[in-house]
Image 1 (cartoon, rainbow, N blue to C red):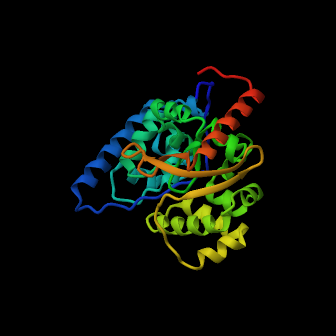
Image 2 (image 1 turned 30 degrees about the vertical axis):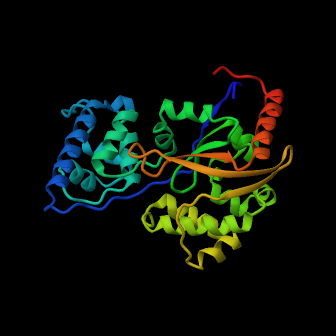
Amino acid sequence: MGHAERVTITSGTTGTTGTRAAGPAEPAAAIRRQELAAFLRSRRERVTPEQVGLVRGTRRRTPGLRREEVAQLSNVGVTWYTWLEQARPIRVSAQVIDAIARALLMDPSERAHLFALAGAVDTRPEAECDSLSAEVRRLLRRLSPYPATVQNGRYDVLAYNRSWTHVFGDFDAMDPRDRNCLWLLATGESWRETFLDRDEMLRDLVAKFRGSMAEHGAEPAWKELRDRLVGESAEFRALWERHEVATMSPHVKRYQHPKVGLLRLEHRMLWMAPLAQAHRLIAYVPADDATEERLERLAELSELSEPSEPS
């Protein structure tokens, strides 16, 4: 484990989610709406027209931007945005919150605060990656030569160490939307050929995805992944229509690596709640001594073929 190790933070797949409008009888929700309204007003008054490419004009009395200007920049209705600043109990989607955050030039901390006040989950890839602490990234590095990754509830691969790419493929070269274990298992030729129990694994993963989607069925990112799989994979469609469900359970994965041969790996998970409820760090540990030796050999081979990097 002494060689220099890299942890890659990826953009994963994109998506947004909505929230339910709170009723006027809910005092906590009402307080949060008041805080949201005040926060929006304070941010709006801070941004000048020139910062967002608008002409100030000579008759402007409002400090910063007008409500109609924020609505225009966010591509939402003026009345709707006005109601939001008046703390009315209206439905707020993550897409709109994202647009408002961009229009008001919010930094990452302000953006996170806005989503928290709106009761929405920011599933923008950068937001998911920002949730990974330095300690988690360090742990990913230190797990080498064991492959390790951080994934969300949709099986998007958000971060990985170098050993992960040595075993499971060059994720750096992939389209960010394809860095998803379910997608790769259902559509990837490499994973189809190298995972010896691929068909059983796909059935199991689809069942787990269906079980998890019961809590996320209204979220666009989950629906987008499901619809993309339905459109691209006849196997996924057939398995999805069986309505099987399953929960997380450890089991041995058999992987035929082209350089070092058979790897028998078990996955061990570290849940990252409460920082990120659905995020988990997954380490693939050897199920036998032969696999241990082959992982070490693979790390040595890869180190010889790659330039060293600072720790």
